[in-house]
Image (cartoon, rainbow, N blue to C red):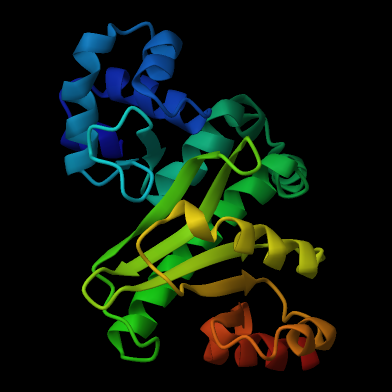
Length: 249
């Protein structure tokens, strides 16, 4: 219904959104999935971009015309709908929505989806903190980075990149929405990727986690002034306090 209100050919846009929701993140993959000519896609994609339903992203530092461009669902409601609801409409219509919701919530695909939303939240928080003057930088550029790590000879990524080119300040972030994780491995993995963003001599490394990291980890890296550990309760203290109050009640 939302698509019909805005678009003349909702079925075509719906098929494109379904393809993106299924993981097709390049024009070629979308064309193969939908059966549309790849040359006709730019018009439809641009329309969806203007509606802020999708977005194109390139690795930090790449040009907008980069061959490594990826296409994502931008609107959280549409992202959830096309990833989990649209493929399972028959189950919903037959009254199995509760069992379906439980299955989705326990799936690896849902964990990945929540992790992606968490990355977006971490970026928003970082920009807000920097703008408020609490990070010692003015955030002129931000995004993610992905590509080849020549030292490890493998494909890798950096969840969050925020840069202040004038002040030569850079923040690299790792976002982990997990109940348990190897904290030392997380830290050392991001340290290995520092050189992938050249031009910044001493980047700040920020680690965003679902729960606070252990005391042993904080002690281990306590002497490093360029390292920060942030958990959800640090990002949203009021909400965390309210959740604790309800749990205690």
